[in-house]
Image (cartoon, rainbow, N blue to C red):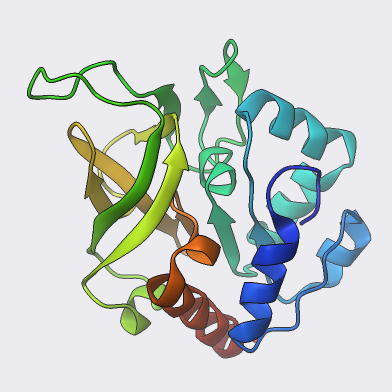
Length: 206
C-alpha cells in the first residue's frame, strides 16, 4: 500500500527478495484483486488514518481481511488495527483488534527514565499459534523506531513480546492478520525471515 507514509519502496524490494511480486498501489481496486495486503507506515497515526480514508484504502484493506486474504502490518500498519490512538488527540482506528495506541511513559516499570522514541534493536519472543509462527524462531532481534505503542485489551492477540520499560506488544495476530511494531525491512536477516514466513503463508492461502 502506497498512501504517502513510510519507506514503501524499500519494503517492496524486501518482499521481492522473499519471492513475492509486490504491486505498489494506492488503488482500492488493485487491493480487491490482491492475494494479500502489506501496509507499512512511518509517521503519525492521525495523518495516516486520514490519508487511507481519503483514498478509500481503509475500507479496501478491511474488505480484503474480511475476505480471508493475509494482511501484514508494519509499524503504523499494526497500530491502525486498534480501536483508537491518543497521538495528536484521540483518533479512531479500525477496531479490528481490541485496545488502543498510547505514547510510551516517561519512565519504565522500574521507575527509571525511558528514552522516547524507542529506537534500535530489541529482542522479540514469539508465542501462541498462527501460520506465520511455524516458520519463525521462538525469538529474534529486530529494529524498532516508534514513540507510540499498542496496548491490547487482554493478551489474546499478542503473539510477540519485547521489553522496553516493561512488556511491549511487538507482534499481534488474528486469523488473517499478522502485524509487527518493528521494521522487517531494516532488520537484516531476522527481518528477511519474517518476510519469508509471510511469503510462505501467502502461498498456502492461494
